[in-house]
Image (cartoon, rainbow, N blue to C red; front, side, top):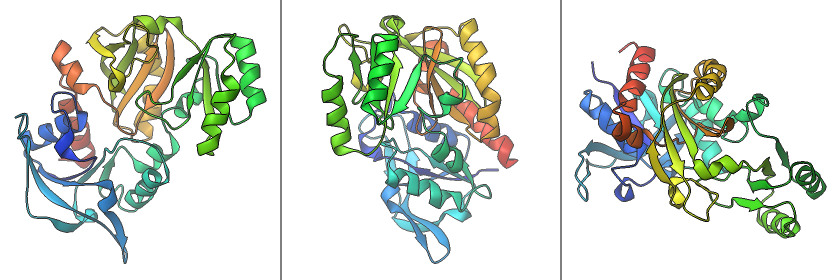
Length: 314
């Protein structure tokens, strides 16, 4: 029996249908007979005891330049839906956090994917702190003396905003680089958020592996190779995806974190692994499933919907 599915995401008109994971997830839902409704995060509201959204019934097709049709705009009560997808990209700011609070009010009677409580409390660069033996040396601080001491201990480091995304604001600082104070002043001049600093892993030149987990189980991986002269491998900034197999170390990492993800209702997760080290656990809007499907035929969207349907008893 078909489910009523609402998708909270960024504007659908501008997406790349050959790369966007939200598109692939929604297309798989449509092919399984589920009815789609689409709305923007700004259209989510609380109205006199109801969590509502102003949006459109949605039909998709894999045709570039003509990949969607919208029905008549309407306001819906999200409690009337079976599934709501929380799929807008970060920044993970108070607007994003507020949407998780509102969606909390209908979950789990309406299944929100990923669980909004744990999205809010397990952002990408913080959930990894629960597994210090799996991660490179890491510090989170808004104190320059702490950041300086960390670099003295570990030499070359990566420094970045704690709640950044897509490779924005990521800097490599060599041990003798004199720009740490200037970067600290730059970041703290426009945000009150701390910074995250990690020991630089030279293995990133060979790629930053994105491992896809569905309901706590590893289903495959892609490698993202940085452009020459770059340390950032994110596909948003030109990282090249390529086929790669799961290693024994990847499986060890996933075996450790998988039960935690499953317990928290984090159905679709993408972790980042450089060399032997876990660097991020992406739960807000992970990507990579279309590349995985092209490289080795693994239909992660199908596996995601099977997990959701089991939870819904559909």
